[in-house]
Each structure stands twice: as C-alpha cells, then as structure tokens.
Length: 176
Image (cartoon, rainbow, N blue to C red; front, side, top):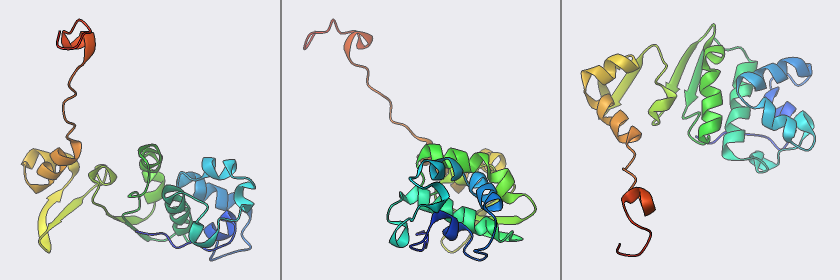
C-alpha cells in the first residue's frame, strides 16, 4: 500500500499528530521502524524536506517513516497492510528484527502477500476465496501441508543454478 506523506520534514511526518514533540521520542519510533539510520544520512537528517508524497525517498523509506508515524500514537491495535511490500530485503530484515518492539503492548494485524512478513506471528490466518482456509503458526501450517505450505514453497523456490566453466566439468572451451 502507498504511504501518505506530507511535503514537510521527516520529523514533521513522523510527529504529525503532535508537532511540538521533542526529537527523542521521534527518533525512538524511527529506530523501532528501521528508519533512523537512513534518516541520519539525509542532507538535514530529521529536518530534511521529503517532497510531495515523499517523492525524495524510496518506497521502502516512505513505508518505514509511515510505520514510525503509526508508532508515535502508541496504538493498542496496529494494522500493517502490506507494510513491508516496498522494502528491499535488508530493510525488511530490519523491520522484522524490530517486530517484537513494534508489537510490544499491542495487538498487530499484518496483512501481507509476502509470507516472510508473517512467519514470526503467533497466529496466521490464511484467506482463500473470501474465507478462512487455515489458521495456526508458521510451523504448524507448514506441517499441515495445505494452502499456506504450498504458498510458502512457491515463495521459497529458487531455480537450480546451472554451473558453467570448470565447475561444470568443462575445460573452458566451447563445446568441450
């Protein structure tokens, strides 16, 4: 899903509900969301203007700022709808590592097509055809061998790499 951001500073976008908030809690939420490090690399850090709809940022950076903003309100229920879909794998890894801190003290609903986004959840509800197909944790759903396991196998599949050169038994020449 596209994150809605304002043509304001990074800090203003994170603390949109409470613009007078000190920088420290803004930075804490950015750290939990995995945004702090890239924010510090911006020209003016937290004071950098991000452009209309965050046009000066990558999709993953926009999503991490949106997650930080959601955390600022300390919600009891947090809905993350495709929150990691635009993240590169390294950024997703950071968000996943911080998911315990993100979820602490609240109920989190994660809506995702990328199963890596939900594998650490206490309960996964798999929808198919408008209804619940399966429910359980990652391990039990894999063990059941149902729809989730098939989806997981598809997303985990890497085609075999065909070796070339000496490792493939070739002497290095064409047609050797």
